[in-house]
Amino acid sequence: MILSEADARGITTKILGLSKADSCIVTLGGSEERHVRFAQNMATTNGSPSGIAISVESHFGKKFGSASGTDLS
Image 1 (cartoon, one colour):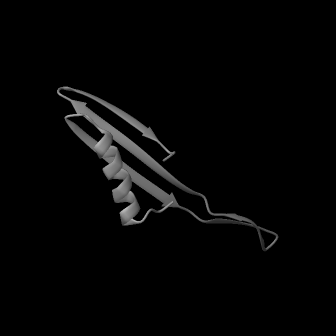
Image 2: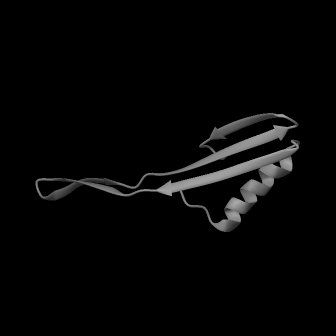
């Protein structure tokens, strides 16, 4: 899934606004792929999977923690 710049900026701004850490790093990544399978000179199956991943790293003094996931809800 490819997000628009405005959507990506909105998500990261919301996450950074919720953080109470000394510093916080938010990383968003997305992908869209296409594939086609051929058998007997015909396209038999095709697909277009897409995905999104988000990771958050928070720093509290010398300690830090991180979390990642693929669900934006």
